[in-house]
Image 1 (tube, one colour):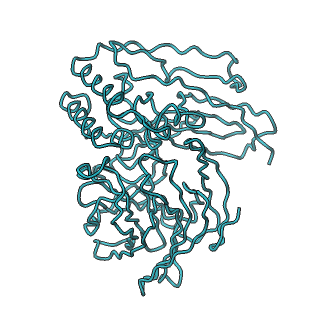
Image 2 (cartoon, one colour):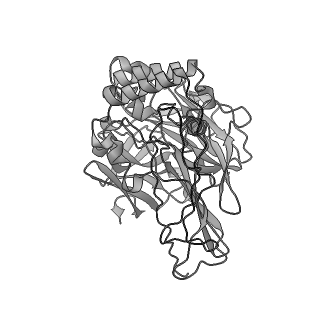
Image 3 (cartoon, rainbow, N blue to C red):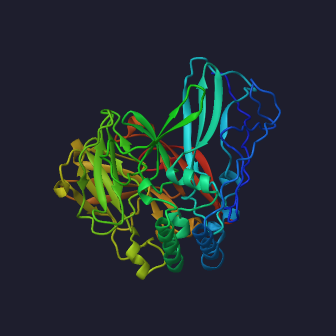
Length: 485
């Protein structure tokens, strides 16, 4: 295959600060385009297009002015960024610097050629805040933006679009941030109380309706039930599709004919044999965990509520095997009532023993679930799982997050070491094996091996220097007792 190099450089974005004055004007990102000095579209000149300004909005109402002033006061005096790891001046730099939307733009091939039979697209999702945060900023927050490279007929088309969530559209029209972010805005007791009071007031004055969703849709992409979805675990999925010209088209918030309530995981697992999507939702209200399935036609199964989970754990990810789903019950909890004893509703419970919960794929209720204590095993992201010994043993491969108590405010102190956990379903014996002590996380595997024994995984290496996080991708080979690079 001939080499292909794209010189479409990152396109800079001047972050717009939330406007607290009488009007707001900005670029019209829907009709503008950007041409990098070294990247040109074949069908257009190399001259950069002008970006026409958006029409000014109406004067903000008196309640909006007052509540915006309250937000400013909180950001400036109550909850300013106290550490570089949550300071947007440091966090939103280099690879994490937000960018503008980019309409479909053909990438110039500067060496070799693309095979004409190559036909498909690579799309990724990530955090890209629409407005410059004035207070602390956590990497998990920020509006979702999709970046797509469409390859067809020997050409590559690049495009970037925001996921058109309710939050994004509402705040774009208003010209300022309205809906608070969980990790950035609720990281201390006093900021949680004051920010919560402002949010309640905004809903009372009709500035936003939480029933329409508060999601950022910035975590992942998944293809299941006949659609492609942008996902974040605090809301319903947002459907998208790719146009023939490479543009990313929003479909909207999807509830599977009214059968999906409130939210779902950002990491559903698609069985490569059946095409079924296994998923769940979690939250701060009992049942804290609910398990369900979605068939290849997009029909959702009945819910299986897990009432035996007695604390609202942070269940970000899970794993499946041929016959089972495995859920972590870790020491990070999401409990609004915890503000009585700690600074954030998301926090670390040192007295809790971490567990893994195992339930058959087609369980009718939680009576078929088994749980196993795995002290100190805090699995936030999973890699894979499979069965051995004719289904009597479950093997789970996952990063174990060390120093998990720093999860909310000090990502620079987090270390994730890869472990292999073997669960004997008959004897209930749990054994653990170190795989790698390097700081590795955010894995990707060949989707054909989900729930099956696999060798290869792509991981991110966290390189933390001066409280900035740099991600490097490396291909990793598992031999199940060591890690070979």
